Image (tube, rainbow, N blue to C red; front, side, top):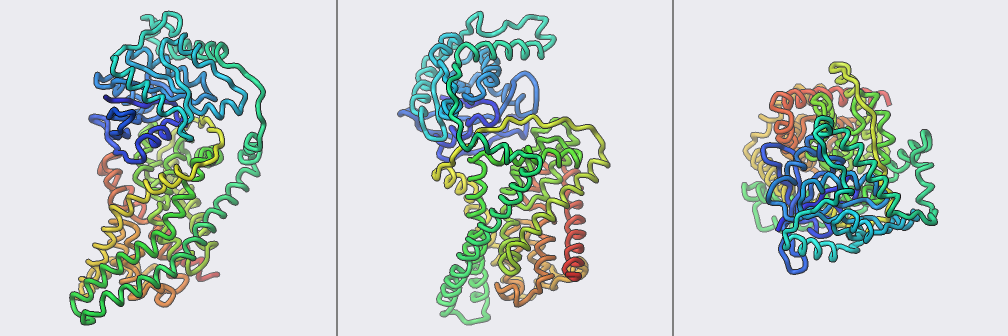
Length: 579
C-alpha cells in the first residue's frame, strides 16, 4: 500500500513523515526529472506501507516544477491513499489545496495538524462537521508531539484497503466548467472563496491565550532590532559551537595520540607499514577529534533553530538583501540549507521559476560555508585565533556572496518579484526530534565522509613515503605562493575537492603536526581558511550542479569559485598584514 503525504510548506508534513519513518528514508527522483521526494517503507498498525513525502505545494494546477511533478505523481494509478496535512492555524489556505486533491477522486484524508497551536490562538475546529461537509475523513493531529498519528494511519490503512474513491459533494467543490478550464486562475479564486466560507462555518474563534511567543515577532521582525537580534543569535551560536568544540577537542586529541603510540609501538618507525598505519590512524583521529567536536553541536544548534521556527524569520529579514543582489526572495532557502550541506542547497534552487534565478542562486549557494567547511573554520581559525576571528570570516562570507550576487545580477538583469512567506508559529523543540535530525545529517559524514577521510589520509601517507607529494604541491604552487602559504598545503587543497574536511585532516599530515600554530602563522591560517571557504565545491556538489544546470554551468561556477576564493584570500592576507 502506498500512502502519500502532501500539504502546504510549513504544515508539519515532514515532521509527520519523520515521526513515522524514524529518519530512515531515501530520496528519489520523479521520473525524467531531478525534482525529488522522500520515501520510506514502514510498519504501521501491523501493515507495511510505502510512505511518500512529496514537496510542499500551494497548488497542483501550476507553479514550480516541484508542484507540477507532485501533481503528476498523485495522478498516477499506484497511489492508494492521499493524506493532506493541513496547518490548523491556516485552515483557509489549506482547504484550497484540499479541493484540488478531491478532484483527483482518490482516497483522501484531511489531517488537521498543529491543533495545539490552534487552541492556543483560540481557534476551535469542528472536525466532524467539516468531514460531513467534505465527504472525507478529517482527523486531529499534533505531529510534533506524536498525537493522533496512530489513529491517522489506522484510518489510512482502512481507507486504502476499501479502495474507495473520494466522492465530491456537489456544493463542496466548485465545478470545473469549460470556461474555467481555459482560465485556471478562476478555479483557484472560486476554490479560495469556498475555503474561506467553510472556515467561517466550522472554525469558532474563542479566547486567545496571549503568551510571550505572540510578542516575539514585534522584536524579531523589527526593521532595526530584528537585525540586532539576528547578529546576537549568530554570535551566540558561534560562541557555543566554538566553546563545546574547544572543550572536547583537546582531550580527544590526547586520547588518540596515546592510542596511536600504542598501536604503532610494534612496528619499525619509518617503514612503509608504519607510515601507512599512521596515516590511517590519523584519519580516524582527525574525524573523531577535529571534525565531530564542531560538527555535532553545529547540527544540533541548526536543528533547534529550525524547530523553534526562527529560520523562516531569518529568511524574511534577509529578503531585502536578496533583492539588493537581484534575486527572488525565495533564494534565501538555498542559502540557509547551504550551512548544513551545499548539495541540498543546490537542489532546492529548482523551486525558483526562472533559469536565471536558479543559476545565480546555485552559484551563490556553493559559496555558503557548509558543515564540512565549518570544521576548517573552527578547527583552524576559532581554535587558534578565537571565535571572533571565525565570526569575522563568516561575516566576510556574507559580504562576498552579496557582492558576487550583485555582479551576476548586473550581468543578467531581470526584475524579481517579492517574497510571500507564511511564518510558522513558534514551537518548543523536542529533544528527540532535534537529536534525530542531527544524526540524520551527521550520518552522511560518519558513513560517507569519514571513510573517505581515512582513505585520503592513507593516500597522503603513501605519497609522503615515496616522496611524491611534491608533485601535487608544485602543481598549485603559483597560487599558494601568491597567498603566502607553505608549499605543503597543495595536497590538502587538491584532495579537499573530494570532501572539504580533507583540507583540514590532510593539512595536519602535510605539515607533520596537528599543532597548526607551530607550522603556520596567524595570517597563513586565516588565508588558508578563507580560500577553503570559497574555492571549488566538493565532488558531490559538482555532480549536483551538473545534473541541475548542465556541464557548462558547472564549469563556469567552479571557475568562478576559484577566482573568488583567491581574491578573498588575498584581501584577508593584506588585511592581516595591516592589522
